[in-house]
Length: 253
Ligand code: NI
Image (cartoon, rainbow, N blue to C red; front, side, top):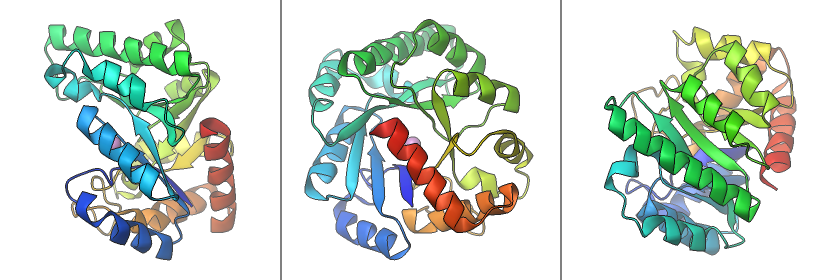
């Protein structure tokens, strides 16, 4: 399995990165995409990816961090993104759940578009964080297409919007939320999409799957997401591993 979205760069793990990776490998994880959310976490993601051959990095400014960023941060992101270990620009996007003020939302859109432009300039895909902003996110991606496509990380939109993102060249990331008891939405989405449209993710340390919901997440729990996908789609776990790995490699390599 490939964990297409985890934060080994988070303070919870960064001092024990080697242990984290070994535990993950014992639980069937072959590769980890370590995703940045601001300048510092992106830099650490690159350092981890340089040091451990199982790890790769995504670099970018998360919408909720846009308020705190410095002007020079985007230049640093651009420099980092040229490293060969960097597979994508992310996580970038829109989050209207945490930011309800119009001016902050406008700022999020501005930096989202700037980072899409950067991805296109460097010919890389993107990892997108979107919460309570699917319509605006879709409009931006439609008007500013990402040449290499990318992943809608922890996709929480409708099955109808899922088809629109897929048409724009995106795959959908499924993680812990799929395993939650009340997770009707992600299950409906999963049922409605084809074998080429999904990748696996944990978002560790966040969003631990059942029965670890509310606890610290870890890539070693990714099998619980994989098992749930197999159950919902009525296919073997081996088929999920094969297909999700193929999808990851198509988008990110
Ligand atoms: Ni994340």
